[in-house]
Length: 294
Ligand code: ADP
Ligand code: ZN
Image (tube, rainbow, N blue to C red; front, top):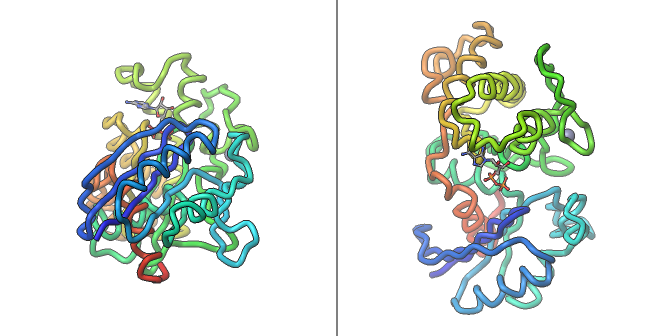
């Protein structure tokens, strides 16, 4: 049995086909252009396979409420050609498959909980720090969802007293994403993050902001594992800095051994490496095929 998945991002679409063990058998990457252009390539790709289902882990915000008139739409994205775009309907109309649809970070959280760094646990948080910042939570074994999906990247945090950078978020300016996303790092320091590896000040400030957010997520959600992925987290030196700052802010308030004694195993990189998102998308498709809720 073959299952398809799309990790739909603002810069690239990754399309893959996996077997029932979620082993990826084939994968391609397409640039995110105008919707009709990108989707025609996506459809051409998936038509080559006899699939049971398709799952989409999508950049957002998106409408994932099945009762809504705009279910399956990409909604308020700053990428204008994709704004209010009915991606699920478009793919369903041509491929005629059961389609699972959720956010890219919810897909990644699901994959990490089922097969990755949080396997065997009934809760975890997956945070991506890339072009944007977002997080997906698994709570009681299910993807956390309320009126809409959470948007944890846009929480407000305290500024560092030495940081005069105005912030990059078009909605809130200096929210977490505005201060700590990849583009925020690039604009503040005048250089792409990938070239700032040896500048310790960059990563101290970055961990100062990410740790504040993580502490809030811990205090509100109490996840059993926190997984940090995305392009910026390729700077592996940030993990110990984040752990140290999280412990410092918590200041022994929570007497939970998993946090205070084993933080190295509590805040971790993705167990599935760079494949969490695409494997999560494949899982979303499989769940849609089996008509299971999650
Ligand atoms: P996206 O968020 O678009 O899906 P990524 O997760 O790869 O993609 O994030 C891209 C962002 O991460 C860019 O702002 C880029 O500058 C930054 N980035 C990518 N690689 C690195 C790296 N090695 N070190 C620091 N920043 C990086
Ligand atoms: Zn914001």
